[in-house]
Length: 311
Image: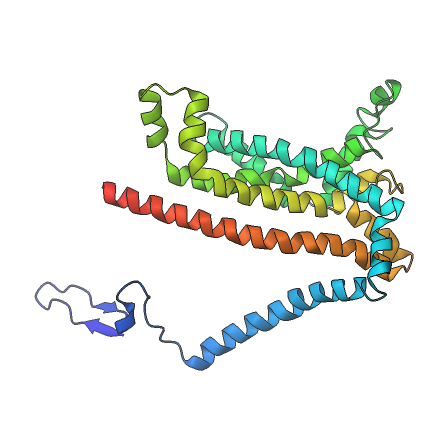
């Protein structure tokens, strides 16, 4: 560290400046002053943690899935109950993700672009699924739509089935996943500001033209990022879905529930084969997530530079 002696006449405080390495010029950063053993320890601990708790378990899923060969693996994921679980999982994600995408766009646009009463309440409600256990969320739907629930008798009289049916699974999954898109878009839209939209409106652009030509290009990667996270959670949700599904084979079992049933029946290879589908989805999600994350950071950096240059 290099100390500035300060001004002895005015009594200005001493200012400590970090030691700058020659390589710092040009954006390579400030030279680290920590001992090499500290840096090596932190990096080694992080790498070991990731290896033990992420890489090894993920690898073992695929090893166990293919333990009895490719034919046994294919048989496990193509049996009727497994295919039914895959179809229900895809149906649930196919409904939940577009709905939550529309909600996320609307909510983030309202929060980032407008001032209105109840704005803080809306922001808090968006975070609600993050603070409530998925099992509790499932029990709420049982309280609402169960035969002894508030709406159960009325629905049963009209032969409408929510619980122990795909409708209940979709509703429960939608509840636990609706914050993901909004939470990714809100900070990006707030960083973007409203100047460009206001300019477009002044030039005569309508609402949809403004969104398509001005807003969407600036949020497309953040939107993709949120959609990916929402889709991954929708396909992998277990707690809330387990409460409302009834575990009916071939009817209300999603991929995670079907894997649990196989595991409880000691059909380990089949269980890991089905679980590998979700593991494969996780790997794909991670790759796309990283790509979208980099794009979001690049766009925010470019926007920050433009904003600073405009000042």
